[in-house]
Image (tube, helix red, strand yellow):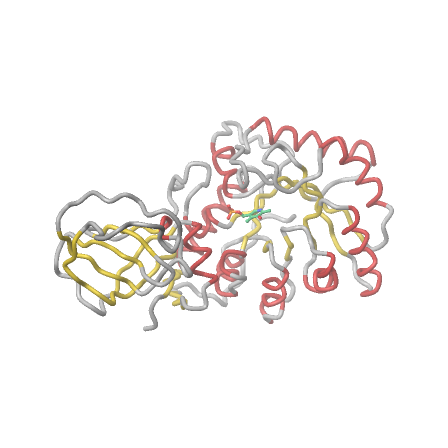
Length: 371
Ligand SMILES: *Cc1c(COP(=O)(O)O)cnc(C)c1O
């Protein structure tokens, strides 16, 4: 089998999705399965949908376009979860049902394009609640809504927020209450009903679980990628109870094994990737090299199997130490990946994908919530 590769267990992804969908449905919250990490993998998207995700979200219109062209997914609700580029509004209106937006200039372009194509495009306005990534300042929201309501072929589907990505701001009860209030304020001001109040991403799981009375206010949707694929919440990278942490693993191949000094020799200057870390002399060690590097993974995001310690990485080489001396050239080693390593591995053309599928991928989906 081709190496390096990602081993992707669709059954575990299906089970993780199903558990999250079931859990969140008790709070009246639907799940949008986020596919961006996998470059819009149809296999992963399908597993999420079959397990009850009610829609798909991706940050790249190219991924949405390729999923849309799959016959099985032509009617699935798909949302562009990054603000559209003006240079791409044509594709956005063509392939996405809705998009997250923060700029009226872009929404006007979406309106023009939607009129040309004879379609409606749904807009979800993102609100800035302190993480300082995308979002309209809360005080400016009402004015923007007013303008959108007058734009032909644009439908205001709802509002949302995204926290914990740039600055690590927690999506806690305070932040979610502000989002709920904003939803109420828009509805009261304009006499309308917002379909969607999207509270955030995998970092919101803690807030949901810590809610004793299943009262999550107006929030009725979360967009989940990492929680489904890696089985963890993202505020503290803790595994979520009952979810598979290892639905996706990375396999790489040993191309060199030598007994080498632990400490480099000679005058030490910079490495290919900045300052060299100081090394303690531990005498000679069993050093092995795997044929994978920073072009394919984030070495800090790998967890090595027992008995193996990651020492360093360059573009194409991952250097490890083995406590035993039973490694062999050509051997495959399996690593756990975090989000940072996963996104790079999924994006590298040198890393192949092996899908493991034991569930019936053709069976009817069972969406548990409308939104
Ligand atoms: C990536 C992204 C998500 C999903 O984040 P996870 O941490 O993978 O759940 C949700 N919303 C937006 C806007 C995103 O960009």
